[in-house]
Length: 428
Ligand code: LRH
Ligand code: MN
Image 1 (cartoon, protein in one colour):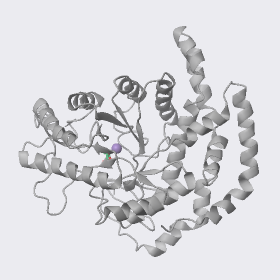
Image 2 (cartoon, protein in one colour):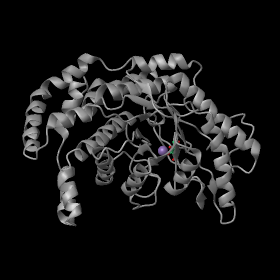
Image 3 (spheres, protein in one colour):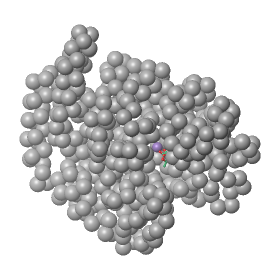
Image 4 (tube, helix red, strand yellow):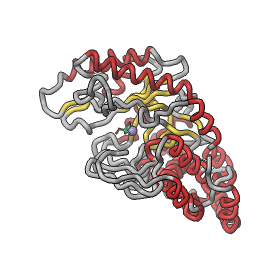
């Protein structure tokens, strides 16, 4: 994989080393006064990783248009190379989540080796029964796993089984199932029968899961259906996961809720029920905007991590999968994915700074002001030096975006990859 030269990263870091060292020491003193050992937090953050969505390294679009950038990835190998650069510089994204058939290739072991050469492994597989492929026998226009036609449901089940087989070849351990099935008109769909068809289809997928795999059910309030969606909210997802069995859990895409829904509360409920599969991190102001994580509401992202850290602190056993799921319509996807991965890491680091004992005491005493202040104190702590130190120790760049721009990587791949035609809508 033709990534960025290690020398270029060393040259980028050289003039910044002294600053990171001083800033880290200063932050360490500040945290010590709060009885927090900075090195303990640094080690926890260094062990944290968030997966890159393969579909996020190409320029995204909306239903109106997509304006491709320079050096668009042509295939899954180009996508992996771009993911390799993100990992090389930001050192927070050791895995990639693939989407089938967008990432189809002829030799999965070649892909697995290519990923390994870029320091990457594979996270959850994503199936796609929300669009029709050329030559497909049955259309998903009126649904897939819940379609009224048994042959269409069988086709959708078969596709998910194929994703599991591909994932097994790549070393993945999970399948994410998001379906757009739903209706645009009152009366168009029988809500209970559609859900029963979902369960019948999902049970066939569940039965094909290897013992150490999990099935992550992704709910979404709307789009492409705009009246009702079969797996519309965490309640529907939870009901289905309960019915399917222990390997089925609920995946929370932050953008899949109505505005102002308290997502951190949903996270707390799913943790308590042992049904939290993981996350698709992004941000939004209105709908499923798929904006960069923490770019609109960083406090909301922090509050999600506050629930995760609190549960881990209380010894709750859970192992959520952390993934980004974003669409980069106006930025260089590599820059956005690096910045978003660091933002997710930042929210985790800040949540580790909450004084849990003092918070428990304030909550028990109904001292609302102290309780919320303890969260704000952690959120308002600038952990940049800690994140820079984690990257530096891992061989990354102190300032990933600056190092990336200085590397000329985008210009280089623009020369290697023919310009992609612009035009039609669609997220990828
Ligand atoms: C649906 C979704 C899902 C992916 C798709 C690319 O909105 O969040 O996770 O399959 O985006
Ligand atoms: Mn998603």
